[in-house]
Length: 178
Image (spheres, rainbow, N blue to C red):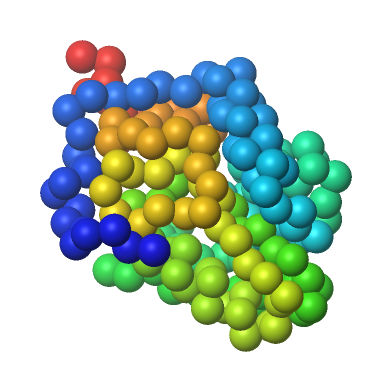
């Protein structure tokens, strides 16, 4: 569901930052689960690893559904090593004949979500819908999302990282402290 042409400069990097607490992220997951539950009853939920497994697992727990993951990434060891995302694990075979919800933390271009959709379709589900915690105001739109924003997001699990054995502010977010 690409709406208009996508240009990464349209949405990143943003001049403003939105820092999320665990509490706020939990509330956004609750809002996402409520939006999904109003019009869809997935039998299983698949979170896109790495970060999509976090909202995916929370939504699956709230909806009392089985949870699986699918690894799709541009990164290895925390560094971007591919221009486009690649599928690094098979779609769960348990999706065959089931209503499936694929969850990621954010969509921008939709490249990752499209790969996930293609991988899950190969298994033969009855139906697939997509959901994200965040969607950009331009670009790919999932079936469900909790919040649309073009801000640079600072996730609670990514704010501080280990560097040489110490917990430090992620270098990507040092400007947010300025």
